[in-house]
Length: 101
Image (cartoon, rainbow, N blue to C red; front, top):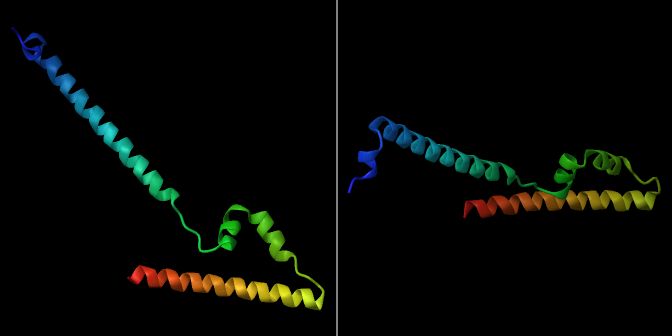
């Protein structure tokens, strides 16, 4: 009984092997590209403010431009902004501490 290698022309067999190697190489390249795409998609944001600034710039600018004129409301909005800044800083500090461990 003859094997496939004996039946098929040796040059054709070499071409088939080269084609098989190229297909495997292409498959590996596609797999690496998918992995790289997944890595690039996993961007993290420090706060909702940063996220909103990146993806919703018009609403972010509008929200930042709206400042109350009433003294009490102005005080409340300034206090909220201070708390947001404090939370962002605290989040950054906690993240740095967890990375050190």
